[in-house]
Image (cartoon, rainbow, N blue to C red; front, side, top):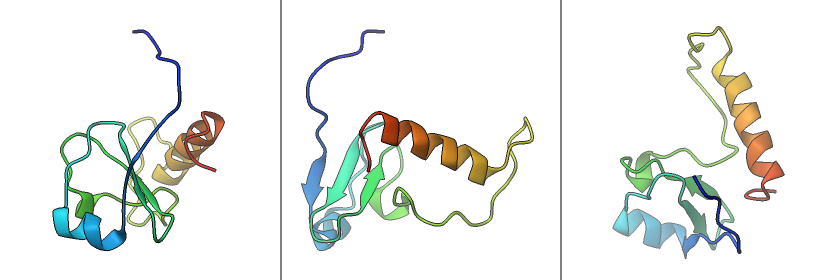
Length: 88
């Protein structure tokens, strides 16, 4: 797999526009709410309204097969997104 170079971009719209259209973002595609500053990352199959915002509270955590909690997994994901300058 080749890693492309260049700027990382995201689809941008207001919260109302996202809600009205309720699109499915491609896997790894970012959606940015211009009016709230919130971000969601698509998985290629889930509609906008069902995706959790990045950095949102995690509830109903179920441990992974290896015993790590969903919170631990989320923290690792957020750290990697910050390291890649995808989120602040």
